[in-house]
Length: 77
Image (tube, rainbow, N blue to C red; front, side, top):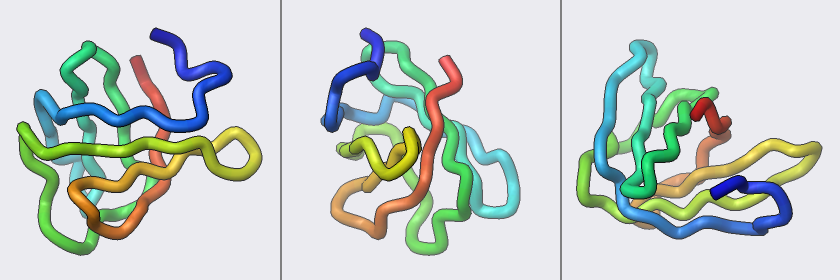
C-alpha cells in the first residue's frame, strides 16, 4: 500500500539490516522497506517489534520502534 494520504502506519518489523553508523533498513510484514536517515542511538531494532511511522513536516516521516525515540525515516520500497 502507498503511504500517500496516510497519517501513520502501525506494523510489525519482519526484518532488519544494519547499514552502519547506527542506521538501519527495516522491512515490514507487508513487504514495505524503510531506512532510517539518522542513527538509532538506543537499542537496535529487532524483528517482531512494533513500529509506528507517521508523516512529519515537509513530506518526511518519523518512525518510533517499541516506544523508543522517534527517528527520521524514508520509504525505499
